[in-house]
Amino acid sequence: MQALHMAELARESGYLGLIGESAQRAPIGGRDLRIQSQVYYMLTRRLPINYLHWLAPDDTHILIEGGPVDYFIFHPDGGVEKVVLGRDVAKGERPVVAVPGGCWKALRLHQGAPYALMANALSPEFTPDRVKIGEGQAWVRRYTGKAPWATEETLRALIGPNWQP
Image (cartoon, rainbow, N blue to C red):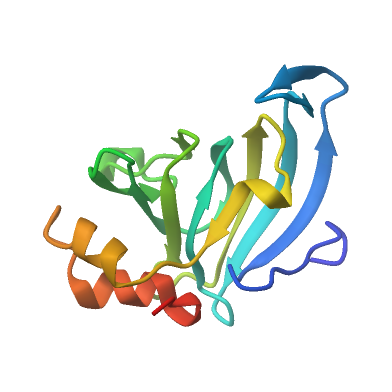
């Protein structure tokens, strides 16, 4: 983690390290933003969950090593997906997961996996004012039952310590 300049990520959990930002910029939403930013992200047995959060930019996760990781995606139209970020493509795992901006998401390291190291490309760039962390009962009601795994218990666990009453 030190070699990649990663530090513990508050509230979301896991470890994060900046890789860089594109030199190109564009006017987006009345702002001048970089076209892309890139980060390393890691889950470990100590920090195995990336808690529920919403991002404005598109976010592409690329597995570098380790895993697999359950990737839960909650779309603005009420749809849900559970994708496994991993290397065993024959089992339906994907080494790359792309999530459109405006979705909620959470990640959970598989039991028995010691860690998962990923690179993320965010487009346009990540800015702290374009992220939301945590949700409450209205959000849980909206997504409960949308898939067999989308139980109230699972959704609350994905929100974790960021529950908003």
